[in-house]
Structures are given as structure tokens and as C-alpha cells.
Image 1 (cartoon, helix red, strand yellow):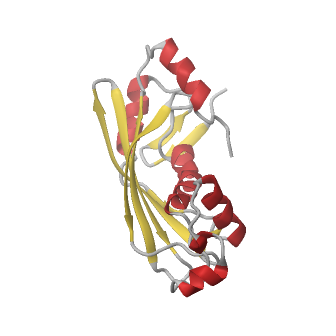
Image 2 (cartoon, helix red, strand yellow):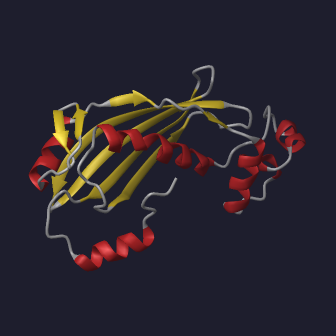
Length: 188
């Protein structure tokens, strides 16, 4: 049984041909939204990210050190924005870029502009934009832009992500098997 989904290109079912997936994706360019969930940056998360990233600078671990360096609170590791972006992208693939399902989609490029540091105690808002889609040599290239701001609307990070996938059939079974081993299908 297929499920009807209303996307910018019009209602569509989950069972799409490769050409329909590509056409619906192309039609969704320009889709954007403010992610409904705000992300609170806790000191614990900042410290966890710093430890996982092997960042030993005290501004990531000790409030006093961060304040001595001129910050109001702990400074989040720069890579922390990526977690927020992954979470905020889910509605994009649920509501606009449909039809990929379990087909592998991998990040092929990332560009980031940092406007101000993310600090513990901030509540972040993410605006997600679907900027571009093109097909090159059988690969679908999807370009998204995330704009992350704090609770006062101050811009903190703008990131552009290029995702590569295939809407077409005939994927290499070995490639799909390898992707399934490294991708986090269903991870939250």
C-alpha cells in the first residue's frame, strides 16, 4: 500500500520510478522551512562534543576559562553544528525530497561560514533551504543550506552541504552493501 505525500511538486506516492524521483526532487528546489524544534546547547553537550573531538582547550570544558577568554559560557566545538543540521534535515527528506528511501545518500561536500561561536546556554533555530539539484554521470547532487541562529536571531553558522545519491535503478549491489555498513539507517 502506498502512502500519499504532498510535496512542492504535488502529491506523490512512495513508490516512484527513478525518473519520478529525480523530477520530484528537481521540483522541490526552493523548498525551505524553519525546523520546528529548537536545540538547547547544554554545557554537558559542549563538553561531550569536545571530548569526542579530542579538543582539550579549556574554553570547551571550564566556564571560568571560557569567561577569561571573553566568552559568556563554554564554547561549542565548531563541528557541533553538524549534529543540529542532520536533525534539521529529516523533514526535508520526509516532505520534499522523497523517493530515495533506503538508497544510499552520502555527503560529498561541505562548506561552512562561521559568523559567531555557539555557546552553552544558547537556544538555536535552524532554517533549512533546498538550493539546487542536478544529475551528473548517473549521480544526483542535492545542495542544501542551513542557517543557524541563536535565540535573539543572531546568525551563528551558515553551512552548504552537497549530498550525492542515485534515483536511478541498477545500483551496484556491492556499493549498496558497503553503504549500508557505514550509513546510519534509522539512527536518531
